[in-house]
Image 1 (cartoon, one colour):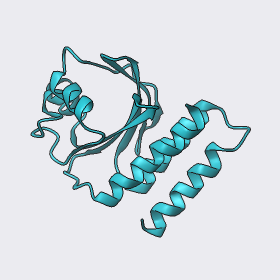
Image 2 (image 1 turned 30 degrees about the vertical axis):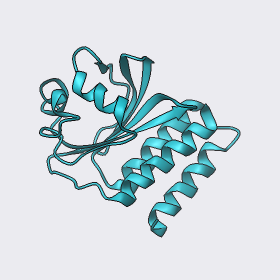
Image 3 (image 1 turned 45 degrees about the vertical axis):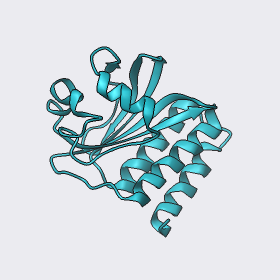
Length: 164
C-alpha cells in the first residue's frame, strides 16, 4: 500500500482509538479518511437495520459537508443489489448504471445523485455484515484500483475493531 494510504490509515487509527472520541466523531473520521484518501465526491456509512434494510447513518460530500440523509435501501426494491451483497465481500462498480450489482439502484439513487461509480465495502461483526462504507464518484466514472479497495477494507477493519 502506498505511503499516502498508509498515512491516512495511521491517522484514522489514532483518531478512532483516542479514548475521548465518541462513535459519532469516529464515523466522521472514517468518512473523511475515505473521501480524502480516495479523492472522491462523497462517502456514506450505512447500517443494516435488519437483514433486508440498510439505512444511511451519515453522508459526507466534498462540497456540502456532513449530512444525515434519511436514505433507505431495502431488499424488495433492490433485489440485485442485495443479492450482490449476499454473495460478495466488496462491490466494485466502475459503471454503476450498468453493473449487475448496482443497476437496480439507478432510478431512485444513482441518477438523482449523479453517481457514476460505487465502491461498497461491508463492515463485519463476526461473520455478519452490520454496515457498509459506500464510496461514490459523481459526474465521471472512476476505475477503482486494487489498492483503493484494500484501503477501504482496511478502513472498515479499523472501524469494526473499535466499535464492534
